[in-house]
Image 1 (cartoon, one colour):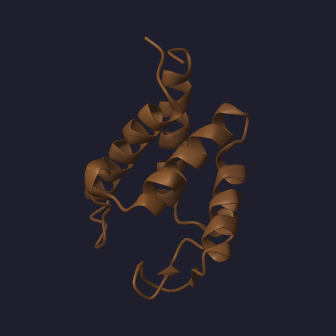
Image 2 (cartoon, one colour; image 1 turned 120 degrees about the vertical axis):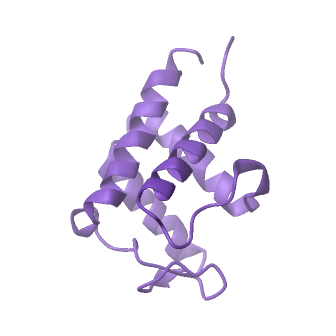
Image 3 (cartoon, one colour; image 1 turned 180 degrees about the vertical axis):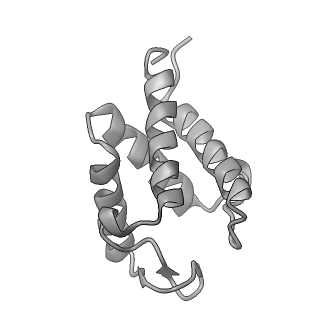
Length: 116
C-alpha cells in the first residue's frame, strides 16, 4: 500500500495533537477531519518538504515563512482570529516541547516514507 503525503500528514497531525494533550496545550489543534483547510495544507506541505530532505529546523523556518506570508505574526498566545502564534521565532528559541513536536513529525514521516 502506498501512502500519500496527505495520509502521512494526517498521522503527523494526530501525533501532534497527542503531544499537545501531554503538554496541556491551552489551544490544541482540532482532529484532522475538523481542522481548517490551511492547517491541513500546512501539514501536507511539511510532509512534502520532509520527504525532500528538510530537517526540523528547515521545516520550522518554512512554516514561519508560510505563516508570515498568510498574515500571521508573533504573539504570546496562539490565536487564529488575531493570527498570532508564539512559535513564530527562530528554531533555537523554541521551547523544548515545541522542538519535541518537530522531532515527532520527522519520526512519523521517516517511519511512513517507506510505504510511499
